[in-house]
Image 1 (cartoon, rainbow, N blue to C red):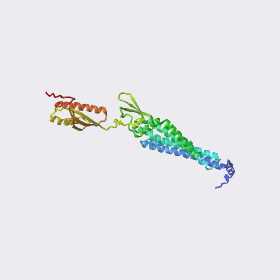
Image 2: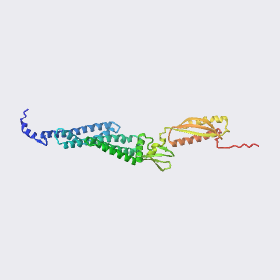
Image 3: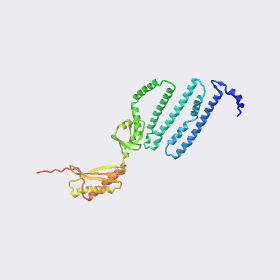
Amino acid sequence: MDMTVFTPLTPVLNQTYAGNTLQVYGIALLIVVFTLAAGEVLRWLLRQRFKGWAKLSPTKFDDTLIRINERITWPFFFVIGVYIAAQALVLPVLVSRAIWAVFLVAIVAYAIMAIQELLKYLFYDRLDDVSISGSRSAVHGLLVVVNYALWVLGFLLIASNLGMNVTSLIAGLGVGGVAVAFALQNILEDLFSSFAIYFDRPFEIGDFVVVGDKSGTVERVGIKTTRIRALQGEQIVFSNRELTTAQIQNFKKLEERRVEIHFGITYEATAKQREAVPEIVEAVLTKIAGVRFGRAHLSNLGESALIYEVVYFVEDPDYTVHMNFQQQFYLDLLNEFAKQKIALAYPTQTVWVKK
């Protein structure tokens, strides 16, 4: 190919401005344009692929990838293009350092944004899939703390790579953090206790729990307190720190309810009546649907009664169902005892007078 047609442009392209020829400036401009175009094309291809995965997957992880992809916009690719193009140019030291600083800030900022989206998926979006959805406030507080920590670490990383001495800054942050921790000790204990409640899940929203001498249904798990609605209607507020150190009885976790009952018959009962009591109890409980007979024994010789111990299991953990079955058991047992002329005992005292 005859190159003579380009010879008139050669002097122009070889002219030097600020240490670089026009030809080099043109190549740098093409690098920036190419990086922008390639970045947008890659971003579009990834978006289409992630959307395809999202339609086939029941999880929200694909939506998280889509959000991360959407947050990487054209300014990011422009900064990358400028940084790559700058490697082909002869630039003043101050300009080179400025371009490197902007490039570093962009990389760190977008990396932190991506990590934030992943953390949001792990600790917030997944709350729709777990039963302790009332802990959104606690998780939000955790994410706020983690986000601040990420930006502080990002700032320290940028400062260190720009040649700044961050040792004294880190020491200052450490001293300041200790001072803040002492000042907010109780609040921080409640905050971290709310995280422990979220991750360990000793109870969930709607569970009926007993804490010490207090009982009720869990209504809300907050950053500092947990609120329980008592049976009488009032709201009981516990600090999260108190709940993580207390013994909690969670009746919602019952798969079945074990019931133990004691009753007594009189000593005047005949041997046949005494032996028949366990059989009568078993027959009564067997007739009740939803109840599983455990055992029935003469367990103690009381002061004024023969004491029997009965154990049975209610397959439905609901307390109202348990009380309905217990009522039915008592009524049927009294009817059977009446038929067999077996008298239930009550506290009595017999006085023998010797003449």
